[in-house]
Length: 94
Image (cartoon, rainbow, N blue to C red; front, side, top):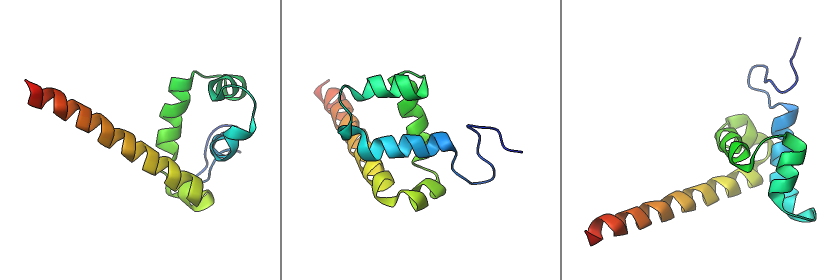
């Protein structure tokens, strides 16, 4: 028996699919993405992005949505590099 919202083995849940579908096509919806996140998932944008970051590291997500997941991984890596560069500039200025 499966529980909605929970994965069985290494399968993606319905919620996982919904999140990746939203990331694939969020620009098609009128209004702010955060409004849709709260409406569809019932969580804050911060919580949604925490869940999404864990999701895009899962092999089954990459297999099911390769272009979306790789794009999200690239964006995450770029943000991390940018934060690192900003942090480095603060420490070198001291």
